[in-house]
Image (cartoon, rainbow, N blue to C red; front, top):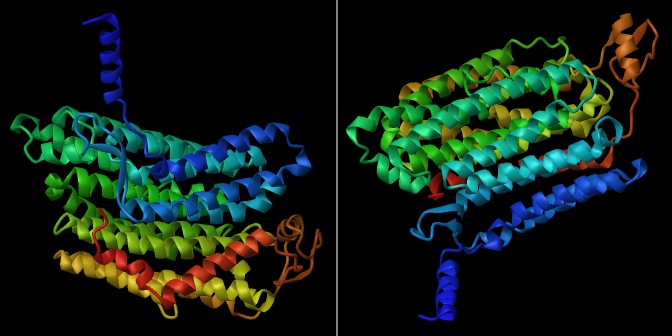
Length: 534
């Protein structure tokens, strides 16, 4: 063979092992990450008065990423596959991927709308938008990941910017403490998860989820304990992201210390990351050990919904930040409901996890809406107590009606039909899997949640009352631009009416419209509970 022929053969052989890239499949992620870099660079050159342009660019990038999901719904697409085994791919776009990416990017878009005023008044714009877009890109990558290495990378890309976002309020003690607690607990959970991944790799010799499933079904007896330990430790990392008990302790303080838009982002997108990862590893990678993770997740679900709802029930209406703390504990309780279908999948089939996806769609819309109204109230009532919402209907009828509707959806009461149907779907998943005791626990917790959601809803429609101001209250109200600035005397519960920023109004309107649409046509979300997602 001549040197030229040998060179040609070498080039041909090299080309045969190069993986092709499906650019359309990864386009939403590429757009989001690219806009993050553009924002970071543009921040260096824009004068301070032009910084709001960065927010507009971020919103445009997230909108473009959402639009790029449309052409992907026609068929399943995979890329970054092994050349030796084309069935083992690291990135797959299927029904599950699309619905979670829609939830993540849509949640990030609503968060961006909520953040426009924050970045103009309190937060460094360039850093904020870069961190938000970077986290959103990692969160959107995770549901498409089909190997443990990509899952871990996606999880950390979504989480690391979130730590910085929580602590971005410079000079704020609560923010710094929240970021530190969030960081330390998350790093510990990640370390445990990585140890579990290493055990799984030791037992199977592969990181691809489908290959892991095949090999765990026939793991050698000597490695069975290693495999079981790896499965358990891997689930710990994702359980932390879902705020499942006993990994929930960071939630209340983190939500209170973080900027409100960031708390909203963590409550929805952070949960989407955790639950999508949990579904992928349990249903696709570890079905052979369903007898291990199924009962464990059922117990965790029961504990999570109970402790979360009891924590929300204990919130005093006059305690500082009690509204945010109630939403934080409520999110822990809702995580328990979301865990039920995943636990049920360990007893029956993977079709059960569709109920988690349907419930997550409802929860994302109404929880983002509740945080949007909380951000509106915080403009004049920075302590954000439940008592501060008294008389909101007299002052801002639209905001009060939308918040009341969101709370009724979370409670599962009409006219929040989507909340009711979503809870029934989750309840049915437990009953169909033979988990009658878990269905009873869920019913008990629904009753508890009804009390604190209805109690807050009733506050919205009570008549404002006059209250005697203390010097501290007067000072806090004055700092927020409210009434009685620096004065001690009689304050009315109704503050000076301030203009609502257009992005904040748009965020409330979009979430309200989506919640109404889901209640009028609940099949939009609920059909995911009856189809195969993979």
